[in-house]
Image (tube, rainbow, N blue to C red):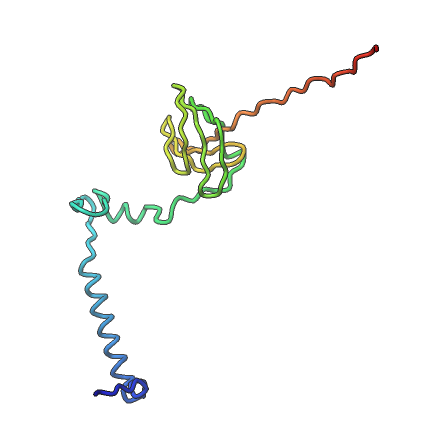
Length: 165
């Protein structure tokens, strides 16, 4: 029976050998990863794999460099930076739940659908923010707002008690 003494492997005598083995191992891994990396210069197209996740068809260094890898930054919004939208849609209802917020929108043809952040709504606008008051959409690079219609509360005057009896 072979007895393994792990503490002897941690001694200075073996530590240098182990560190060289680890450096060689990670070096081989890095070389392998770099050899499988395929970036195409401008204008060359890539083929989508037959099975697996779809990939973009035109990948170039320029597009990769100018893309928003971690999403687009939306600045702090106020009424001065966002104009009222002229889209032919109506906000019917809003459910605010953080990143799971939803909005019900009625299109011009009367069809109502539920949308979430970054969904495209009729009129080629993309939902960027959902608040209790309404939504902010981006259409043709411009931020626009759609508000939830406010119906005024009409209170009847207090009924006077009947006199008599």
